[in-house]
Amino acid sequence: MRERFLTFGAPLIGEAEIDEVVDSLRSGWLGTGPKVARFERDFAAYKGVEQAVAVNSCTAALHLSLLAAGLAPGDEVITTPLTFCATVNAILHAGATPVLADVDPVTFNLDPAAVAARITPRTRAVLPVHFAGRPCDMGALMALAEHHDLRVIEDCAHAIESRYDGRPVGTIGDFGCFSFYVTKNVVTGEGGMILTRRTEDAARLKTLALHGMSHDAWRRFSDSGYRHYQVVECGFKYNMMDLQAAIGLHQLARVEASWQRRRAIWARYQAAFADLPVIRPAEPDPQTRHAHHLYTLLIDEARCGRTRDNFLDDMTAQRVGVGVHYLSLPEHPYYQNRLGWRPEDTPEAMRIGRQTVSLPLSPALTDADVDDVIQAVRSDIAR
Ligand SMILES: *Cc1c(COP(=O)(O)O)cnc(C)c1O
Image (cartoon, rainbow, N blue to C red; front, side, top):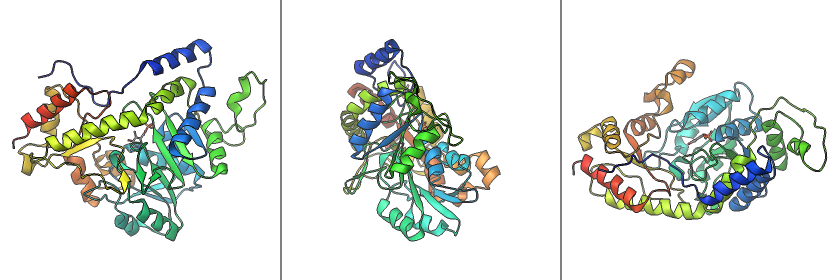
């Protein structure tokens, strides 16, 4: 058994990130400034778009996008039950009503037919999550959105590198929201980014992210001289700091190398578990590019002879950190009480949420770490 506990989702931090953070600290400019502006330009260039708006989390990105989409109280937003709670909390914070549609059992992504069945006269938006980095069926979802005049907000927290029919995800809907949380594919500690096609939406997002102060208020202390600002609406404190962007600049420069490494580990897991009674993820659709953010197995007690939670405990005992992405959202008491959700109403997400386990999939893993994970799984699951 390995000696050191293998932390799930530990990031790969290089000397360049460390030096850049130190440079920010020495410069005295820690807050929103030139490095955030550079990170926005670099991210936009990576995604092949004109503009990007940095914020301090993907949760903030989702909240502001929903506000900029013009949602009003009573408006319904259709999303997936197989996501992090932030997705649905952002809809509630925006004053709208989340409505769940079940996922496809093969892709774990929103099933467009289930979305169509949940559309009502009050539906205003769809919020797909590209689960594990596998792109949603954007062709079908965009067709539905067009037909019913819905806004589309893509939750791309897992999907920085993903493409659908050659197009980067997050550039297909009206808004694309990204996360740079510590376990994500590019990290800034905490951080997020919003892509939007319309210049007026980008300007509104920037204003909302910094107290509702007029555009570029962060420059008020720069060497170009003090500038007065005007508060034009009641905004939020969602701006990214230069300290965070300092990390992100170098993470982003390595995004493709990190993706290649995770893709290779993902492929090793796929081959190593082929003969086990676990259910492995479907291979990526050749029309798409999978970001390989998560590698998930389903542990069905009837097939594997043990429960998912037994498996989690055994992996931890073997010093391999594991994750669960995710218990379906209707399993949580808050949503049951406030919205009347029941897990049985989205049965595919319920089943996946009760069987799924995420194995370590970080570019920081050595080949020996990957061997240890494979061995721990194989010793736990009888063939
Ligand atoms: C991580 C995550 C979020 C939230 O991201 P933060 O940057 O931590 O706010 C939202 N949605 C999904 C699917 C996530 O995995």
